[in-house]
Length: 230
Image (cartoon, rainbow, N blue to C red; front, side, top):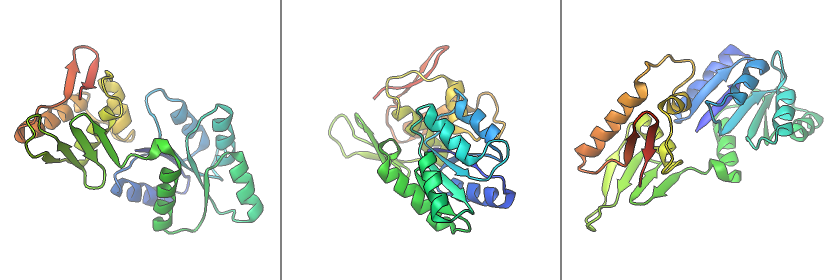
């Protein structure tokens, strides 16, 4: 899951990003509304939730929410703010926020509200992917492969990045996805990954499959990208 975090308080923004990354989220952190809108408009990144502070420079969190909803965006939004009066909550929710968290808060509550958004939003329910013989489980970062000859299913432990690559491709089965799209979707925009980072990661995934004597379902489409063929 990729999250857009919009928070101009550096200490708080850094702390939130670290906590989210520890929970396996991919996080883009920006500090003003103009940067946030640039990210939201980008064709390269698809966010599954946005965490937006109300009082940010350039374009307020309230204005961001209104702009999102005026563009018919269904992106779930968790609003952060120090404005905790009932009328402020009503204003934020009416602007398009899906939930509202008042500062100061504990990180456990932030994570709980994200989980609640996941339960309410069908597009965020991604605990398990099952396609053909392949089942990917978010709870333990494990891939289970059913053998074609009815032998016992093979369980393959995955690193975080292996898991993210497989999850993204399994969300788009039989669709060819350019390596550049995978790179922008699964690597932090603050990083500067080498140009062949996607090809290198795909090689690691294939080696992992080979180590467990399983055929890898990720196919290379020359000059176009990669495709998950279950």
